[in-house]
Amino acid sequence: MAALLALPAIDGVEITTIMDNTLDLLMASTPVAKRFPVHRGLFSPQQLRAEHGVSLLITVLNQGKRETLLFDTGVTPDGVLHNLALLLAVGSLAWFARPGPAFAERRVYFVHQTTSAHTFGDFTLIDNPVTSNYPGALLFVTANASPDGVSTGVDTHQIGVWYDSWAGKWGIFNEDQALMPIGPAFNVSIFSNEFQFMHTTTPHILFGFLTEPVGSSSDPATRLLVTQNFNPPGGNGTYNPHPIGVSYDPDSGQWLIYHEDYGAMQQGVSFNVWMPDGGEGITQVATSSNTHRDSFTGYDSTCINDSRANDNPHALVFMTHFQGPTAFLPDTFAVAFAASVGQWCIADTQGGSIPPGATFFVNILA
Image (cartoon, rainbow, N blue to C red; front, side, top):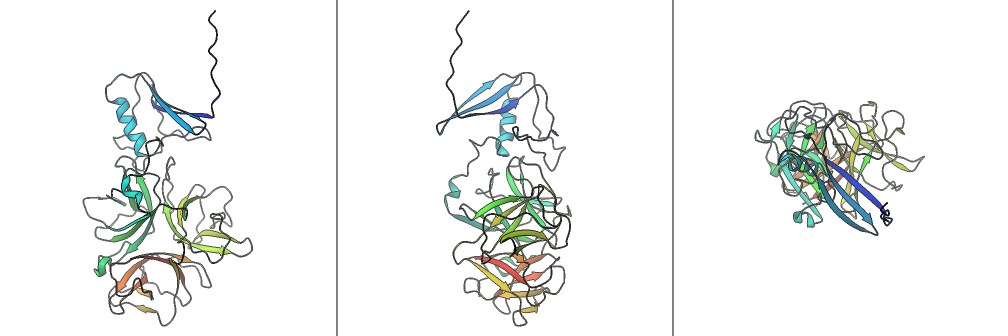
């Protein structure tokens, strides 16, 4: 009888199934097995394939090193390559999914405007080399009614971001699944530092419409900006068609995300969270002197007096409502440049009035 081969101990092993005899696209992930995420267009022709045989990508982890090999048997010449491309697009192959050279900068920000070429149903796809093929990116988005001072109209729905694994691109979509209009614009930013992270709700949701504590900051002077994330890497999508804001709970000393309309918070909803570092973030409080019905946009607006944005229609402004001394604000908001005063303003895009004391956390990139 041949002697058994003595195998050395290792720290861990990762096995990715590239091809197998059968495939269940609706099978859920488990604590030890991450499944391919369900696409928002479930019946898209671009799905993983099943074929006779098996193909496994095996990675051995030991003492900080990773060694990978491909065990492959299959039938068709392109089956494994097809599945590899899809798994790479959604970040399931983590050893491939890294930001490209364009993301060597600390931050990238730009305006995305919807056109018929990249807008489909309730979403618009972002074609940018920094965000493309990067499912782990944390995008922050604010509707912009007048990029470069030019009125484009505005999307009046609650928005989120999602990663289209088939196209390898991030998109902006309407959480209520309403059609995305052609023409409106959005400010988009993507960063690479410790001040951005993702928060996903757990069963420990508080009071129905509040999340559990967000991040580790207990400082009431912190400013949070939040964008909803439909499908974080490796996860299935969750719609959350509610306006959101942030709040500080002085009793627990923690920050929370909440629904402005008191709608129930679901488990598994994800948010990209941004804490502007240093002196970047500001707090905008609506007063009788800075709030007016803007003749350019027609919206009730509170205007921001900041040297980075004053008389600068090219600045990019990002904001999130902070539930301070005023009531909840269930409407949708956008930023718009008011040429009459030379300032960027936060506008209620649903025609409502912004009450005195309404507070927004703002970051300006110029």
